[in-house]
Length: 468
Image (cartoon, one colour):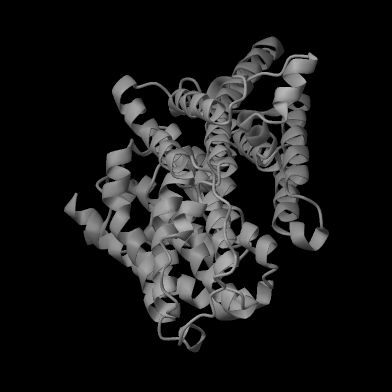
């Protein structure tokens, strides 16, 4: 039965990777894979010899000796545990996405356009790279990419030139998302999973992530595509709400407040995000002069107001397919963890992969540690395979304590490695859709820049971790 579950998972994984070739949204195989994996577990419950008790964080070798009802109860408890942990991530993302959409409702991001006051291509490249690096750490790399490419489309008329800017924005956004607990889904997973803390994550990864952004931008500054000045279209005026700047700073400040709230109260991050969403929603409703309503009642008055409510409008704009995809993939990986399959795989990796740079290695014992090359390969794999399941798998495979260097290296590798292919990250996929970027154009023109930045940042991490 374990072989059948692994086969289902592998086929689902392949379908997710080939979503553009199959023309099937990746949420579909993710949800089917999740349901089938857990269904096979339920059907073959008596045939499993071991089980991972997520609540106790122990591998139960005596699972085979339990009776059927005890096994069913344990499976239901485990399923509920994983659903709860997954829901924490999903509710957090829903809150963050809604705040960003509320900002956009008031044209808040158009304020950023006023920062660009030059026509020099190199200067504009650095402005967008730095903005992507900073914004992605605050509003996540996917949203930062959408915002900046939207602004880019209003500034750069030549599509061929715009593609180059979009490629560097993808690299910068993924680099910026790696050093912030709210900058990327994978770092959010590690943060909510109590593998990293905000202070140590920033301390370990800010400099390597900055180099991962800066080196490709520096190299690109000397390429022919960024020579000379842009033909800027000054005739297009962006219609701005009088509250645009206020909502931009309020919304970004509310999202930044979430890690602070967690440190003060020790409550899960989604609680702080819901508080931030509530505060931003209050101001949004006041500024829009509509009645305050977070839920819609079946009355003519509420229906009329729903069309003008920024909260309802923002909730309708959320990328629910992405939320369902995360649900499917995280719960599918949880099924492998529950059977102990990930632990067996982790043992094989640690036995077969050579240990690199033992003098610069992790603080735990090298004999039981994880090779740097394993984490680097995880980063390379994230360019082909979605980084969410890779990090989810690492959470089940490795059991180093909180803020161990391993978790920070995984956060860096999974967060930035996806830049090497345009389908390797959410930022790349959304840019591909917005600008119709060709897969092979990106592979020829941008991938090598992303690889150089990834390797330089990884080398910087291997050095800077010795300072902590």
